[in-house]
Each structure stands twice: as structure tokens, then as C-alpha cells.
Image 1 (cartoon, one colour):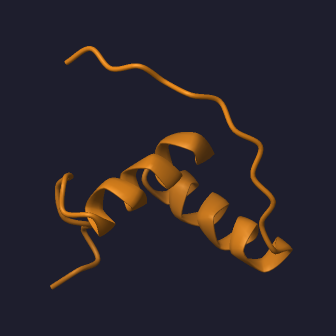
Image 2 (image 1 turned 60 degrees about the vertical axis):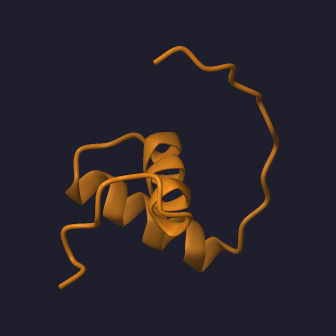
Length: 53
């Protein structure tokens, strides 16, 4: 599926960044892909997270 991408600057608390980076590494995703994945799941557009029962 083709889609337009928009670049943004995002500030995160250090602990949230570390948590996201840890989850991205666990799932072999880039930090960007992890954030996009979690946003898509949160709005009901993506596959469920493996940690969700």
C-alpha cells in the first residue's frame, strides 16, 4: 500500500524512549517502526501486539 510519510520531531521523556527502544530491539524493529506499530495498534489498524492476551 502506498502512503505519504511526514517527518516530525518528537520529544519523549528519557524513560519512555528507553522503554520503546527496548521493545523495538526485542521485536527486531527500528525505533520508528515500533512507534508507528504501537500507534496503528492503538487506533485499531494494525495486528495485535504479541504481549496482549
